[in-house]
Image (cartoon, rainbow, N blue to C red; front, side, top):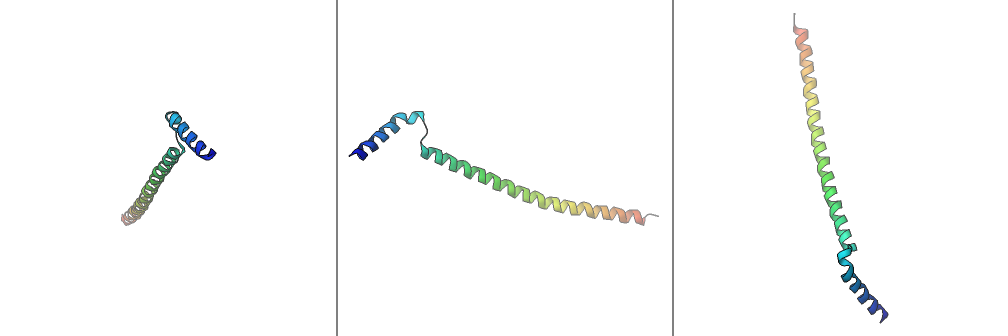
Length: 78
């Protein structure tokens, strides 16, 4: 009987106070959503950095090739 009264009292308090505070479930949902959004963003940034690293590697190889060709051109000059 006391448990039933307590449950009803807690519900009534929740109903009365709910405009003034955030329920735990709402905080949990918001934190889960924030964690998901941040995780997605970090994953996307990591993928972007990986692509940038690959392109930088290709660009570095091209620059080295151009440098070698310049050295060969200079050596071929009379």
